[in-house]
Amino acid sequence: MENHRVYCLLLLLFSIHLSRAEDKVSAFEKTMKDSVLHYRDGKVTEALEALQKAKGILETEQTKQVGNVLPDAPAAWKAEDLTTEDVPAYLGGGKVVKKQYRATKGQEEILVEIYFGSSMIKLIRGMYANDQIAKSQGYRVKTAGGERVLIKDLPKNNLEISMPLDDEIMIKMTGKDGTQEDMMIKLLRDIDRRSLKTLVK
Image (cartoon, rainbow, N blue to C red; front, side, top):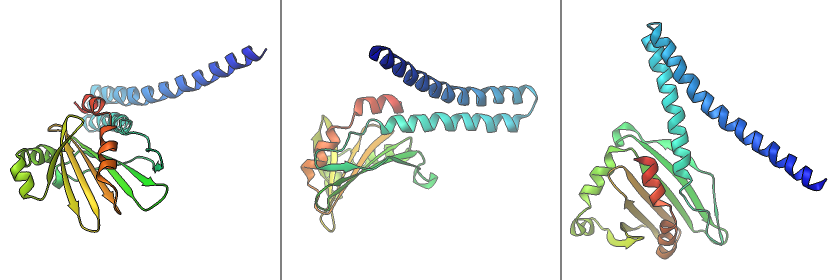
């Protein structure tokens, strides 16, 4: 009897999960279908609006998946919910996913930001590709997890670490109130960068 109850519960949970997945798919498919129907009726403006809506659904899902590459909070730390923002066009456009980590004891904080789809990333990467140029701008250059990172000491005992992964992705970390560099580097290494590159390509 107990096994039967467990089986029924698992079946119910699976049905709920499947239903939610179908809702996501149907929302995207419906907008695509609407776009086709509008186009066939000669309603180009409405067709474009439906396409934009479909694009928004895909971008929302991509942003969630990008956020999933960020690690859970380390021991003695807690993490806040993800937030996402559009990067203004004058800053290169694209999107940024943010996650704030806070020490459970003390005032230390680490803000992790993943920028992607911005034209400024390629520019920044090119500007600081040379170690001497980076150092002349106040950066220290290190390697973490096989990737090149730029580290800058900020006022009030704060710290900034940037890791341009390629021309489309940059990870930026800001440590506040005396957050240790080693702690930030460890968190940086825990980011699933391989999955991140796959998602944004």
